[in-house]
Length: 406
Image: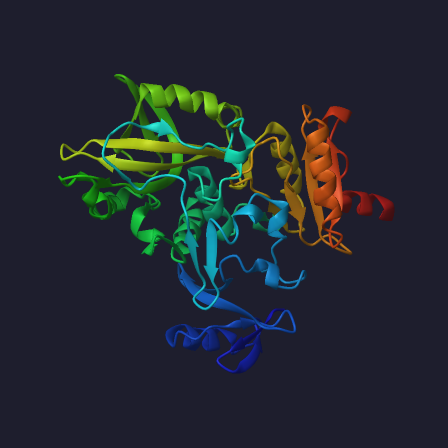
């Protein structure tokens, strides 16, 4: 059981008095501390649905012990590492993460594009010290805990949970001194019986987009699940799930660019009926009520809402999803696809957590050199490597362990 320090009282989360202590701490805005290490780790209490939950502070998972549920793998193993301290700065006293963005939240024009420059051939651009649009989506997913999974959660993760966890993550992120939540729109779960009130709330949140203004206009960031790209004159109408009747216009040049840049994500989505296609976009509006996409990036996720960027990752994630051991999916952020990362980590592997790496079939010597350096730098983690060119996926470490015991 987990041990916490709540307003001077040491308690466990299975104590009879724990819920009452948690409620009092929440009302008094007292910060809880996790006692998984000799140095207590600050956390915070949030209200999700009808339940109070103790969550780790942003980007603090590495401070928790490896056996703690709040532990996160080292940032250096994913695309998050190069961004810490530059594109992402954390105020440890408040827990607020301040971001530097590589895209604009205002515009003077209406031209739209498929955003994300991390696949540009120039690797210097790929290591930009600002977050691309896709990297912001990855950060939201990471901070929401949506990269983590165990088979114990099967059937328990739906859009309702995704929506609330993303919304909660945005509360502790700011851009240029402004709360991200004030510029972020995530469609709430739609219910036919609540159609009128849901549409009213949506109209209020997006109202500023349609006001006439002189000079530059503010944009908002929308994160939602793609339902369809329907035909329109000179472009596409983008349909978002849980936003029935609401259409976003994407111009023809941007649509062609989107199909090329995110071909893999579109194919992963179209090839599996249980997968989801997530989009993050900057949107603007006109006084006539037209909503336009200015920049957009896509991310394919599995039935469990775990991000995947290739068929090989999809196969690995599907294997991990059947395990009762908790795993965490690694995200690329700004890293180009030609750079290695820990595609996933088995957090509860014994005797130490295990990083899982995929070597794509077209990988060259530079990829191998970088991967060897990545593995050598983390002696505190075991390493599992699937070289796709050598054949089928090898057994996972936990599967090998069970096979030896059989």
